[in-house]
Length: 456
Ligand SMILES: Cc1ncc(COP(=O)(O)O)c(C=O)c1O
Image 1 (cartoon, rainbow, N blue to C red):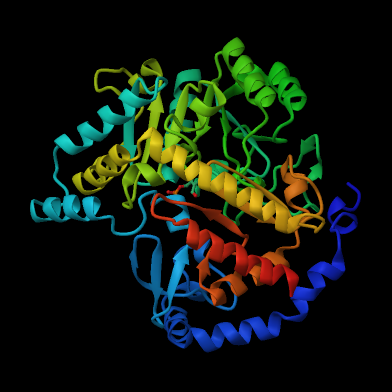
Image 2: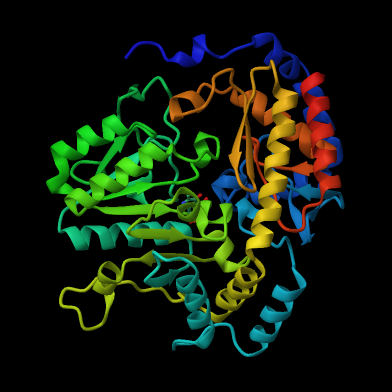
């Protein structure tokens, strides 16, 4: 296996060391600014294991609690207003408490929040999405992106009558067991770059045997070789067309084209996981890349701030769940298509015109360019697409998980905490996103704050 590239390619240790040397001071400042969050975190630890009920918000020394949000900002439990640059994991493209969404959900709440019956709001949201994206011939709603992924895999296996799901190293597709392999494997255990080991991302998995194969991202040759040799047992190939853990990076066009060609050749179901990627353009990542999947999984923005998921795509595949199908694909869910989510989603998606996507995409491009100027000559990479951006603490240009995983995580975490101290909320791994409410002045302030952190 050999020692990972991480240790030799970590880049300029003096640069990372400068922030590490300031960590105690940055944590002390965080403690000073957030005493109420600290007290709430202590309370939370008495009921939630380690204090958390959601992995994504875990951070050291503790996360800031949020009491309200409006537009592009949130207020923490200590009364500090933070500029939100992650918008509940990219799911609020109109920002917090958008008046049109608030009005719609308030009216609906007064009429009941869920019924044991179909409703017109789920129908209207479905019509909007099916009308917008050519590959969406049919759609089914779920309550999270993870559920959508789980259902897409079930549909693929039913369509093909065989079990194996191909996923790519470093791709995150939510919490379903069959995609919880090699999401963030340590380079020590990941094996050869061209033939990665399937590394469990969590305890409690039953194994990959006959179920899952992990292949390298952006490696068309490795994909071709595996699919040619194993096509009879492959049900589906799932691709994240904006790979979050790999720098919010679009796959290379040749790689996606190869996945499409191989899937077509053998009748394998090609699944795009656009739970995040759908925000990169009016027609999602597939419109941007010009490659059409068989199924697409959705979440986040289509729920307008409420829990949501969906699987959309070919009528013949999703038709396997129709009531008259022998051996049909079952898909239950107490809150599937509930009117609160559906109306919030429709109001949000209607507001997301091509002009809005162009606007947030242009702001994203500007931020990436200015971050790249700050990072010039430093062991930092700036990547992203559309309204999404990410800073990775590595000297290595990012093309695959192996590149991204050479990052200095401690540097990213400390920089992220220093950004909270300065009033900006991003992930502990420095992922960011822009919503329609984000202003240029806020982004200027963020860039100034980041520059100060980098220079200190
Ligand atoms: C690409 C992708 N797929 C699936 C999911 C899972 O969605 P959820 O958190 O709604 O279950 C996520 C969540 O971040 C995601 O980014």
